[in-house]
Amino acid sequence: MKSNNLYLLFLYFGLFVSCTEKKHTTVTGNNFMTILVQPFKDIKPENVAFVAQEIKKVYPNVQVLKPIDFPDNAYYRERNRYRADSIIKFLQEKTKPGYVTVALTSKDISVTKGKVKDFGVMGLGYRPGRACVASQFRLHKENSNEQLFKVAIHELGHTQGLKHCADKTCFMRDAEGKNPTNEEIDFCKQCKTFLLHKNWKFNSI
Image 1 (tube, helix red, strand yellow):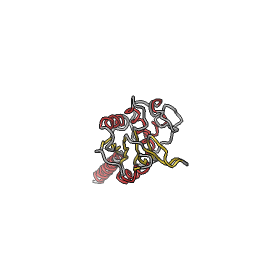
Image 2: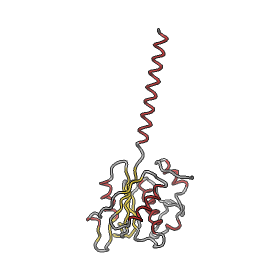
Image 3: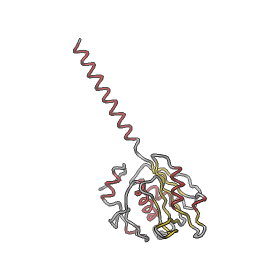
């Protein structure tokens, strides 16, 4: 009798441990974020599709949203361009926890940089953050889709917590006011290792 009770006690304990481990695994799975690709109405659908497809190669959980208008307060009339910081603020308010939004546009965008009130940029992302923006306006015409992807993935890297990288072939290099995208090949090993801990996927490292 005692032997049977002892057996039942061990069986019950084993079931309790199994359920606890299964529950823990489920919670971990829910930590995966979703990247939202948010086009503004000015950019061509084929440009958006290319960037989204390239992002999926390193982070498969991607959704493309319907095109929207710019927020009214983002327009900077004096230079006929849009304020990147205002765009990001607008998007962050719309982006729920567990999601990161990358906006795509063909329009010129700018931000205050140091003593320069309105500095034109290819993209902007805060570290860390829930939203960023990439623009096609300052890119070379011959391979602008590929360049736009590199700007977008750079800004997404910032939202994940990555700083600028000293490796000149890394997507996270500092543009330093220029357009070095044609020199960028991939994330460097150090940046890949950082992103792997954020559930990003890479074929090689």
